[in-house]
Image 1 (cartoon, one colour):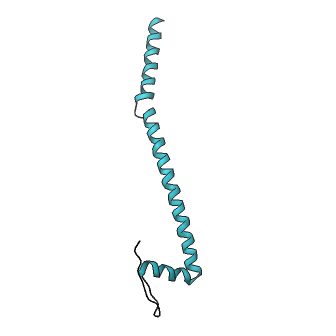
Image 2 (cartoon, helix red, strand yellow):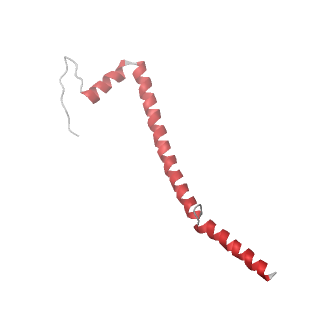
Image 3 (cartoon, helix red, strand yellow):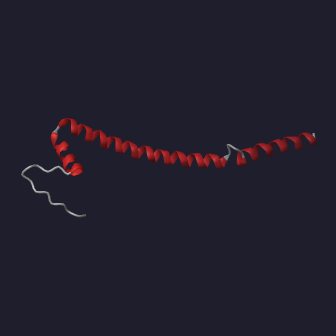
Length: 89
């Protein structure tokens, strides 16, 4: 009976050691939770960017004002009767 208790205790210690220090142990679980949190934040930022791009696409499809604004801001478009004055920021 005493030998059985020693064997069972050894198994229990081995199982606990795997839980705490093994390949899929607690430290790995904490690391995976941190990675999951970081990925969730990155996903939220991507969702916000996608929503912004979707709104911009809708504006581009609906009117020419947005096209003109983008051409002015990104390409430096100037109409024939306008004078362009660059401002430094």
